[in-house]
Figure 1 (cartoon, rainbow, N blue to C red):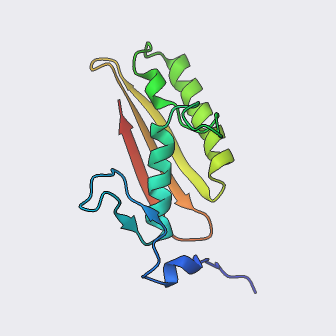
Figure 2: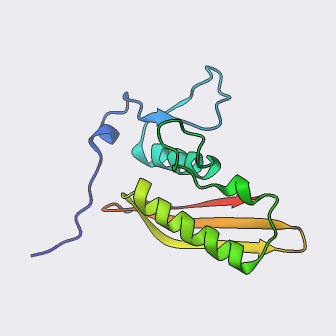
Figure 3: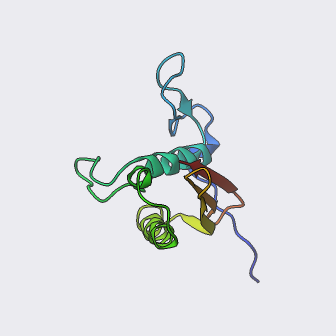
Length: 134
C-alpha cells in the first residue's frame, strides 16, 4: 500500500539548533540565525541568484549570474538563455529543489527583467516563490 511519505529534516526537530544564517547580514548581532531547513534553503537560493559565476574561489561555476544581465540588451534570445542556464544550475547545485515554474519576464518600457522562481522541496509539502527584479 503506497502513501505520500514526507520527510522531515532531523535538524528541524530541535528548535535550539541553527541551520544557517539569514540574509541580509544586518541584524543586531550581524548574523541572525535561521532554525529550519526551509529558511536555510530559501536563503541559499537567494544567495545563489545574487552570486556571479567566478565569485566563489573554489567553486567558479556557482551562481545564477543575474548581475551580468543588468546592462545587456533585453531580447528574447537573452532571456531564454538565462532561463536555460538557471534551470541547469538549479538541478546541479540544488537537487533537493523541484522547479514548479521559472519565468524570465521582460519589461522593455522600464528596461527591467523579472525572474520568478516557483519551487518546492522534494518529499515535503513546502512550496515558495522567489522574485528578482533588476
